[in-house]
Each structure stands twice: as C-alpha cells, then as structure tokens.
Length: 130
Image (cartoon, rainbow, N blue to C red; front, top):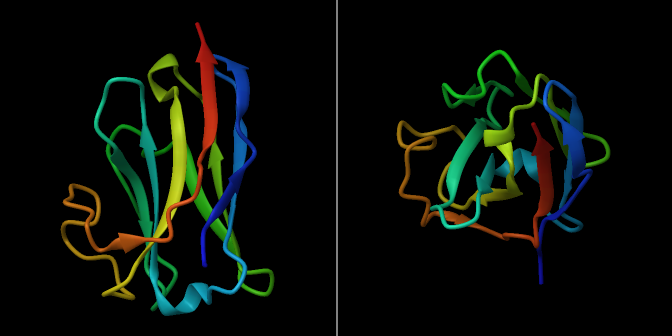
C-alpha cells in the first residue's frame, strides 16, 4: 500500500528552521499535485502548500508565505518543506498527500475540502517553543 513517509520534524525555538522530508516509495510524484498539510492539537487539518506536477509551481497559504519553501528531488521522488522563521503557531503534525484527481493545484487546494487527497502518512511533529 502506498503511503507517504514524512520526517525531519523536531523541537525548535521560535525563529529557527527545520527541513521536512516527504517520500512515497512506489509513487510517481509527477503524476499528482502534492500538498503539505498540518494539524495542530484540537484544530482541523489545514493546507500549507500545494505543488503542481505540471510545472513545479508551489502555492502557499498566507500564514507561511515568505517563510516556507517547497522543493523536490525528482530523481529521488522526494519533496522537502524548508521552514524558516518558525513561530509557536507553526506547531503541528505535518503531512504530505497526493491529489488523486489533479496534476495541477486546483483553486481549492489551499482552502479545502481535501477529500481528493490520499496516501496520507503518519506525519512528523514540529514543535516551536517561544
């Protein structure tokens, strides 16, 4: 069964950086738009970014624009989320998932609903201390 594997999370002070990894053995990233998501305790899962497979363009929610950057290693089928200037409100479990219906990020990719996304992994915990 295909599942994303997220890693790279940890505990960091506010203002620090982390780089998350996302891989899915057996999944061809270029076949799907790939989203990064996060879920904080007691809150709904929210989108962080969406990357189109068609041209590699990434889109970000306003709260992370200018601080988070998505990159990918196509040969290794791995995607990264570089997170800089971290804030306590970034504390969450971070996930990646694939849009099964689209290769290009759709207009609702960052707002939801996210029912088209699949192959959710266990996520990686990011904790930002103040």
